[in-house]
Amino acid sequence: MYDMGTRKQALALVAQGRSLNSVSKEVGVSRAAIRSWQTRIEPLGRTAPGCPRCGDVPGKPGGQAAYSYLLGLYLGDGCISSHHRGVYFLRIACADAWPGLIDSCAEAVGVLRPDNKVFRVQRQGCQYITCYSKHWPCLFPQHGPGKKHERAIVLERWQQEIVDEHPWEFIRGLIHSDGCRITNWTTRLVGGVTKRYEYPRYFFTNTSTDIVGLFTGTLDRLGVEWKPLHQSRAAVTVSIARKASVALMDTHVGPKY
Image (tube, rainbow, N blue to C red):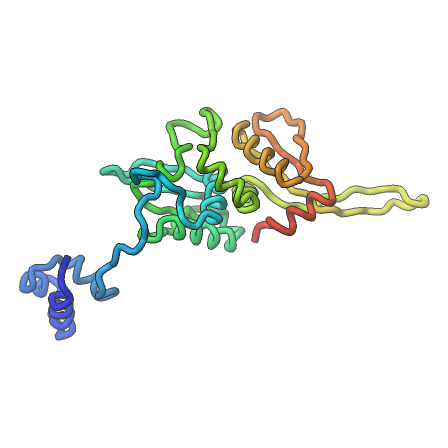
């Protein structure tokens, strides 16, 4: 940790037109440190908490509504991979078609790890919201080798308590990752005239029966009626079409944006 005098001295020399290399040699500070001081001269405080799961008495993360939402996104379109030296990176794929979703995802990641930078990595048709931390496996213990649908996905007690406290955020995260709101239509013969009727409907599709169970179990507790669609493929699709249930979903979830 360098004192404020050293920081100001280094920046004053740079302001005189000196190169970072010469200032680094004179002051005895790395060029990377000097570059960072040009953006922020004050030392970063340790006001943000560390990992709430790594203490002697493990606790719940702060920003529990954001956590519940991010948990839904992670279970749908997220993964955690090892980087190096015990660091992991969380990556959540978000389609370019939904810029509001991308912003919401990045904001939730920032709430969970306020000391870590959130990156937006552009790929064809999507952005990966990415953040490096040693503690992602602590926060998402569902992390493991292989695909999610090939291993058990069970929430720990503290996670379930958060979901029970913030169920709509969890549902919203799952819909934002592997769900959608569409407008269906049908025709009826009324007085000899064929009329077209449109109605909104929600779908959620996932190959993991455990994740589908977490989704439908939370819907049950919220009083949302649903039914599975019979399909030949391995993935399970859940439909929400009842008017009252769609109205609940519209109030608390809404379409992607």
